[in-house]
Image (tube, rainbow, N blue to C red; front, side):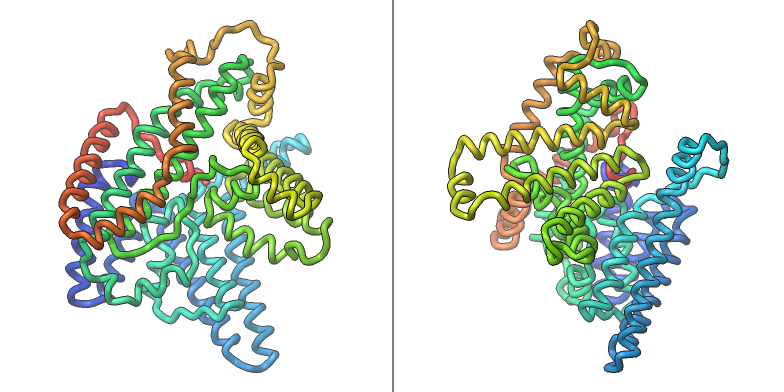
Length: 497
């Protein structure tokens, strides 16, 4: 059930929203249970066969969390060690489950290719959203052991994991961000200011997905498909394909995140922002502070720092950066392309840290104040990001190499935009798309700023709520019609991860 479909917008959302506030007038626990059941139904609508897996994961992690808490609450050293053992066991079990479903096929295929074997096994189907609900629960177990987090309400815990706006593609949530909201009485009372602002930000996210991301995707797909098939692509095609995917991915994923945030505001729940204009970044560290922010924070807090961070010297710091980014790449999918993508970003981060280490604080301040240097730094950062997105998008490393060779002017081809011509597309229109989307990504205010402004206006000025709600509903209806009239409805890119 995609956020962009009539089944969700016209049926699921109104019924769940109305039921939540009607039941909330009678029982807060009942309303939370209603939202939990609706979220499980939302997941089961996608993959009914894996609903039991999701529920079993929730029950097991809730129980392990209670064991960690019970042991940690004792003052004895023996119980402290027992709490740590429970935490390690719980994290290991989550990673084992994730590894089986996500990497079993990759492991067997890689082993067969390396050893020339023909080991055959039934293909393992990847449960949708498993990366997100697994990481969410890993963070909960670690926080229970390390930060004293306690959760004794199974309904709230189940809702924390399954909450439908974030369940399929994030953001990655922490217990402290959500549980206090489920305990507040105000969450279960209708707030028309939150509702109208939520409708507006949902409409913005829907526009990003239906118009911008889906509109530019035809200029990326045929070029990468041709490259993955071993066909050469010329320089302009290669650049167009790389840029088109760069903007498709951003507006697709940030559109989903906006819709998730808008939906949550309708239920008086605040989700963390996941994007902060990442294509405005002037270095790769800043890019990762702005792109998929909840995953970046998770990797930093639970992997990089756990590996030692920068506490054990310069060399160890670079090793930790590389390991973190390679594993972050592998988290996105079971493919050597994702491993190489993670390696590239680990290399980028290492170079960035090395450059900053070479410069004094005074020099860095002068450079950041220099507009020419800032422009060059932004261009270099975007070039590095776009090149890495080529590896991220290509199905094969060979295909990525073909596109990168084309971008570098090394493609030995006399073809004139064959991939675009075969798809009935023109280079000029594709470049116009990329130019327009680039201007939006770099120059326009981001949806976080727009959303916070709308939320403030709608909550402080009741007179404007009807106007904002009307505009939001009209935009949603129009975009829904646009989406329905297409030959096919595309899923969000991050549903694959």
